[in-house]
Image 1 (cartoon, helix red, strand yellow):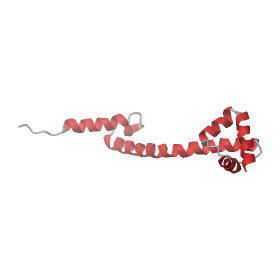
Image 2 (cartoon, rainbow, N blue to C red):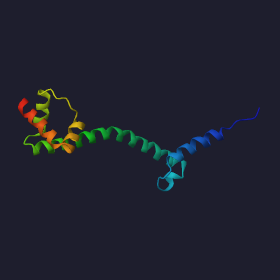
Image 3 (cartoon, rainbow, N blue to C red):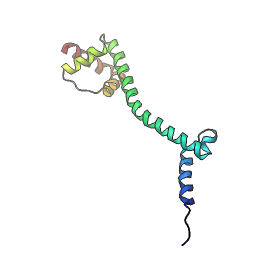
Length: 117
């Protein structure tokens, strides 16, 4: 029986890594060893960024809500506390969308939060 050296599997594995490194600058897209390191590191960055994105959006929503609250004469924490006491359960994403697109609706929410506090 002929001896199998595994060159095909090695080439496939290397091409898979080089394909992922396509578009990287310099040797990172051409040389297997540096490409492997770059792909590994980019995978780590992607994993971390998927978690950071959630924090960043929440921070953005809170900033938008806070700005809209200040326009209605109250601060963010009082507004959120008033909504909880008034038993209005809207998440921050929806509150920020209301603050941007429906100023009258957000003013009504602020009034309800003021009366509940």
